Image (cartoon, rainbow, N blue to C red; front, side):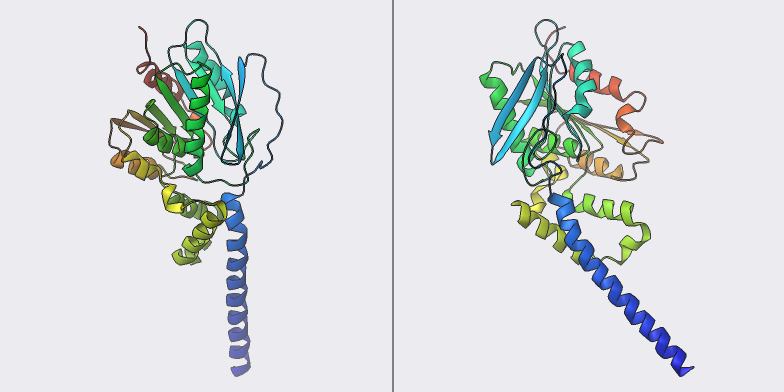
Length: 299
């Protein structure tokens, strides 16, 4: 019996040590997973034939690239379209074409470190929101910023859109599809999605330390990556759309942003829809189009 207890005790210590070492290894890997850009050097893309102009802007060590889609006739306004994490502006080309068909100038932007845009690190909207102001400035210099300026973003781009809308007074409306409330909250949400019940064994202090290390590496304060906090300063209309079955970023993130918003806000929660399907869910495109058109010039 005593020998058996020693064996059990040895296995327990071994498993605990392996788990501790595993958590250490995971945390080191996770720091890179959080902030390492998927395309730090940028990758060449061939612009579709209907792209009217290619925009290139340098800011803070990154080169940002965007495609401009023009409507027939004078634009009713300008819309910046922002993709999700580890995606590119190609994802919003169908959206841009649809908006151009509604009379809007649509600009699909590669976030830093994504698609054709360079940049070594991600900052979850902190640097990216300033990048968007630089993109808007460049459009203005080219006389291609027809106001009102509006922003549409998905997931990572949705949180960025809210942060950008709070700092640039030219923005007159924001659409955020499946945004995260803050970096700290979305990392915990992704831990739950990726690890399931095992996520419960990771102490919050370790997760916070991992996020702090990621922020230090990427040169930003993780607490500034907070769409909910930015919503407190956002005084223009905000449309939030989220899937109730979102397995990556729970819909309560949008509810928290709604509750914090200083300006007019509407939250649409779509039953039975997960994270990747929300943009294609029935009624979402129509709701986005109606929101944008209600805030643009013209009849």
